[in-house]
Image 1: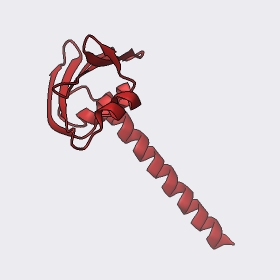
Image 2: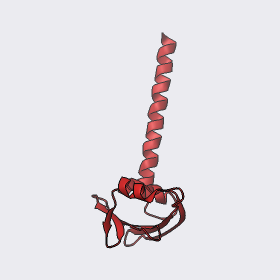
Image 3: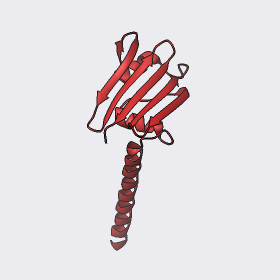
Image 4: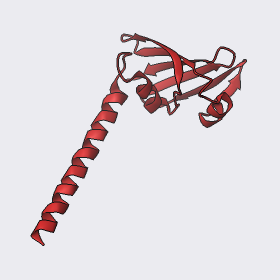
Length: 127
């Protein structure tokens, strides 16, 4: 009986440590405001927009203004654009597709050009 209790305790502690580690990683990704690491993950976590398979990516960051502009050329050989637009709630606006929103700490506007397949995401960090 004692061995079962020890095994359950070790399992519970391992699970708790794993969940804490995952929570810390997500928090670290969410709080990044640069272009160096976790750029795509940061955009996805803050906006809820999935960044699909891309062939090119570029990012510029202004730490003083707390803004980030990222551009991605979507690989249309691997991504169905119509499905992508529907799944990520883009709406047609002036010949492009837009998804914009705001949270208490982030404002964003994503714009997809259907001809060039370039997705531009502008983030404003309100911290």
